[in-house]
Length: 221
Image (cartoon, rainbow, N blue to C red):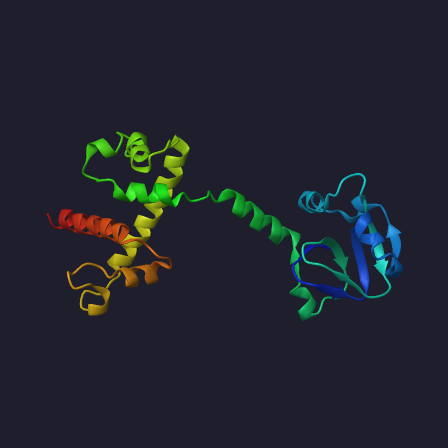
């Protein structure tokens, strides 16, 4: 038996279902209880945690003897035939848990703080600490609010990731392609944004281009 999250209005007509008490009571006219021994199904820890509804709403296995419908967001166990249309209405719990963990691991990007880092002068020692990180006091002054070390570190990580991607995109521009460069011979912002897959500011692009030119000068010297 697989455990699913219902992601579309689901109609099924046969098979075995693992439901909590509330779900079963709403459909008792088309269900026949088979077992309350849920542990015998050998559910994984992830599946048990996903389905957990509390001691007052226990799980049990039922045989479906008629048609029933599930709404989006319901959690069910199902053992039966799935056609192509039906399968699109269900997401395996493992996939759901993976998505939740991925979302939990991704920090919320403070765009204002990232933009403040872009405004710093790489050549100004007052803007950066000895460890190479932006000075918190300078960032706080630009934003007129307090900035924690973790906020600075998270934003600086995003800033560096974006700069690396922009620098790579600029390096891939064709020197002879006029569409890739503006009239003043700087990278075309729209082209670079399209290459990396998201919009960037002119300041971000210029900062990355300065790094490209600096690296080129150092290589030639």
